[in-house]
Amino acid sequence: MEEYHNGSEGSFSSEEAENVVKEGIESVLGGDDYSQTHVNKWTAGIVERCLTQLVKLGKPYKYIVTCSVMQKTGAGLHTANSCYWDTSMDGSCTVRWENRTMYCVVSVFAVSIA
Amino acid sequence: MEEYTSGDDGNFNTDETSVLVKECIEGVIGGTDYNQNKVNLWTANIVEHSLTHLVKQGRPFKYIVNCTIMQKSGAGLHTANSCYWDTTTDGSCTVRWENRTMYCVVSVFAVSM
Image (tube, rainbow over all chains, first blue to last red; front, side, top):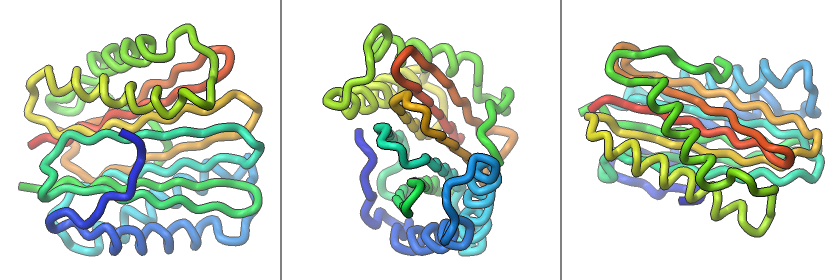
């Protein structure tokens, strides 16, 4: 169950979530180099911003947003997600972003409120 | 909103889940060194085994299991989670595991139905 981009399932719009997330990452990290003193603030800022924007969409979903930032040093990083839910209503979206000094991976999971 | 281990939220049992996940990790990568060829298989197996055991508990939850494995090379890795849900019934649990050559972080999110 490797990480994959979920297609549009039911009411969850993967594309819309992806745009929200990309904008969230860019606004927090765009133009910065990896900095150990700032990275905690960045990851917190990214998840908070993405979550706020997603909730503003006003859809009947609960959300889980995860963000990982890793310094580029040649180390290997592998991530997998597995979900047990209603495949017709729920969905996820993962965005990978990088610049010269770091990688950022943000995943959004949306679970419909019955 | 840095990563934290949530306490008992309503019906979600953090301790029980934590023990279950540790066993799954140990079962898949306990005693092995980081291996680029195998790591994709490991992450897939860890999430699959964890999810299967969680579902077997028969509780009225939807689950999301997330597993990250990183080679130990001195690089910095930071992760944050933020959740918009019903705090009385939903919950999460994060387990950090390491050996000489790699780190493994597994997060379980449980959303009540």
